Image 1 (cartoon, rainbow over the protein chains, first blue to last red):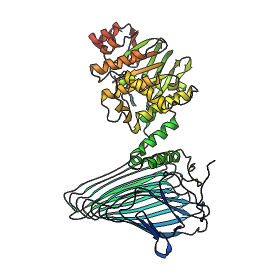
Image 2 (image 1 turned 90 degrees about the vertical axis):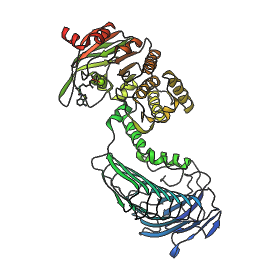
Image 3 (image 1 turned 90 degrees about the horizontal axis):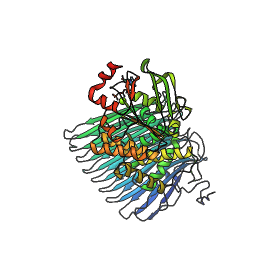
Image 4 (image 1 turned 30 degrees about the vertical axis):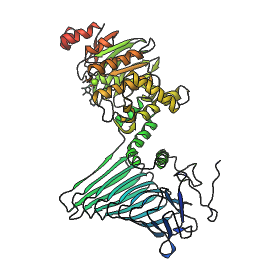
Length: 345
Length: 248
Ligand SMILES: Nc1ncnc2c1ncn2[C@@H]1O[C@H](COP(=O)(O)OP(=O)(O)OP(=O)(O)O)[C@@H](O)[C@H]1O
Ligand SMILES: [Mg+2]
């Protein structure tokens, strides 16, 4: 049996070792930062307005050590909670952030996080949202990102577990040369409900954006994908792509997908597409004809389906952990992991 | 090894096989020829367990087991292999992972522990050499973006990995250039022992110069209308099916 290290001053909080050794962990319990305001290695952090949420300021001195923000809902606050974060990368700063959300009890938690991210000129941010609560929780993320000239955002959202998950994401490309890679993966079963409202707005010329969202829905699960690419007048030489692909495992699962383009410039390359499909019988037969049992073949096909989203996650250690998590999620073994005291990831 | 008796198969109420009889013994190579649409692939698919077809009559015994009662994966584990006429593409799944899963399922069935990564890679390299396959192929998605000939070569590679006892190769020679044809034939001949058997479905006598069959069958409108020695393939090639059909 593995020994878990508890953060001494916070009861019932765990040490998560999912992302590997060299990581800076920041805990929020019920929206409240669990450490004093401090500044180290180019990272300044403090509480937000009304003492809630997290303000981060990252400058060029930031090392390549990832920052993991672990936000937990405790049993002390079963009521709905709202808080807002502001994370700012100074010009030229580079950072890697992993955001994990957990619940300590199976209460009907409802949490709304407003997150504002500002990327200064030439700043690079790699950010991963792990949405991993429980079947009765209500998870809401309202994310607003601004990218200045030549800034680059690499953002992955993994909706693994939650009663209702709502993601509202607005990305504003404000300076020329800004680039945004935005991916999402949603796996829902039972009565779960997942929504993505995505808007990528090209306000400036010569910007690039690329989005890939994939979902697998089982049982009576429902999902909505509402994605818009907006290109402002004058935002010439825009390149913008968006794809949304869905796999439905049952007749009762439902997906609504609405990809939209709103383009007010003429010299642009934009494309979008959406598909809804089922497991491919021919592929299943091919696998079975090689001795792979039906259930395993179904599993392998689902893993194959999500592969390109996972492939985009740049950190190899995190990527291979994610692969395992997604696999156990799809096998219905969720959510037990040897890596933490929570049965979460 | 395989005994098919009076096999009738239909799909959506349409009869495709109408009383096939075929007997294959260990150590033999059988060739099945026949015009387009005569039911060759259907026969192969039904033997491999494709569920879209309905067997309305007849039996197929494989090593004494009622083959038709088993799901496809169990047939595979008992040593049956189908080389697909149209191999399927699987984006997102590499050949390495696909074959690892397949080989380890087979080992599980034989109560053997899974191969270590090292052992598996060694086995794979060895089998790739048999079909002269470039190692870069196995890191790609299964058949994704492969040319027609590369897909067929990949089928033989998979066969070499799984070392089946009865391999049914459905037009593995179609679309192959002469070198690839030699490679595929060489793959079959390397794997051939006195304990296993091959059924090769082909349109061309050419393949049978490399893989010499013990028996050649002509399938026509869902029945085997003629069986004979390898000279029958020459007769088909030279005189066409009409000649044989009219004679029967
Ligand atoms: N899924 C299917 N649905 C309807 N008809 C089918 C299906 N599969 C096969 N058939 C029909 O069954 C008949 C036999 O097909 P099959 O593929 O077995 O022929 P074949 O002998 O392999 O032909 P070829 O030499 O062209 O490969 C054809 O008329 C075909 O259209
Ligand atoms: Mg055919």
